[in-house]
Length: 145
Image (cartoon, rainbow, N blue to C red; front, top):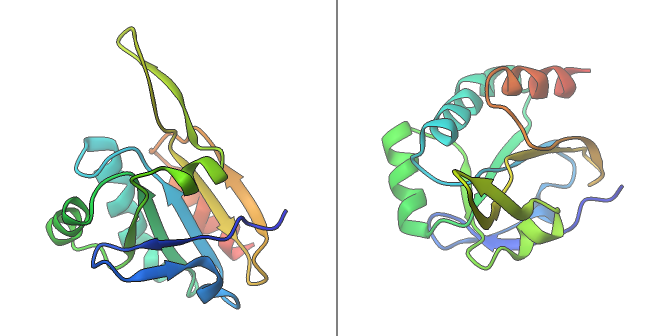
């Protein structure tokens, strides 16, 4: 399936488009919130795995603001862009903006998900409702296969 195209601002307000990365593999991961324990672990796991990713581009997306993304990147020394999807348009395009339940409360939010997009812009593999432990290793294996 062709990956839905999009353009969103990154942590510095610069527009980033998926089409800018045609010719490269892209790890597009959606996560609920900056600076929460699971999201921090996932981001740092992606950071630490970059040397094994054979040149794939990593892009994170959440509904957090530019300022929150800037702080999250600085605190964790993340070497990749985090995109701002405050209106959750792209999250909805990828089907990851969903009704969630937590401690008996229902609300809409991002369900942690990752998409591996090939050099031609097609979704090569997808992981939905991701558990953080071991996830990045699965992504690295898929990139290398």
